[in-house]
Image (cartoon, rainbow, N blue to C red; front, side, top):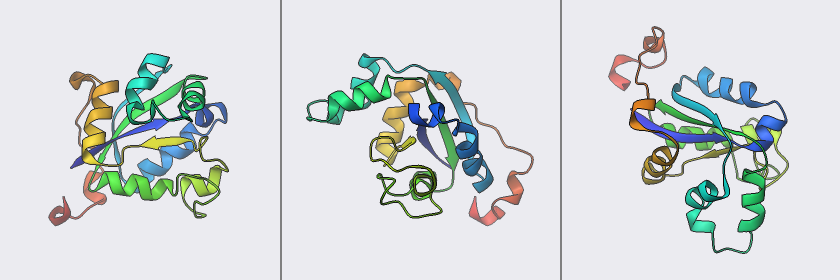
Length: 153
C-alpha cells in the first residue's frame, strides 16, 4: 500500500465542497488514514511550498493558502499517488477534463481546490510536515476485501 498527502485548500472549504470531494476518494476505495483541520501559517506555507518560495508568484500563493482553514489528509491505497492526481485532473481547472475533480469544480489555476503529492518523495515530505507518526492510523475496513482481489493487494 502506498500513501499520499492530500490538502483540501481554502477555496474547497469556503465553497463547501470538502465532503463532496472527499467522498469521491472514498468511493474509489482509497483509505483515509489521517485527517486534521488547521490554519496554514506563513511559516508553514514556506515549508510546504519551499520549491516556490523564491518565485514571483509565491506571495499570492501564500496569501491564498493562509486565507482560510485547510483540511490535511493522508490517503492510502494501491498506486494512490497516481490515482489521486488523475482523479484531480490538470492543475488548471480550465484545462482539466470533465469528470475530474478540478474539471467539475474549478475554473482557476491557483484556486484548484486540492493539493496532492506528485511523487513518493514529496508524499513522505508533506506527510511529515503535517502529521506525527502516531497520527497515521493504519486500519482495515471490513469492506476492504470488496475493492481489490487478494492477488492485487
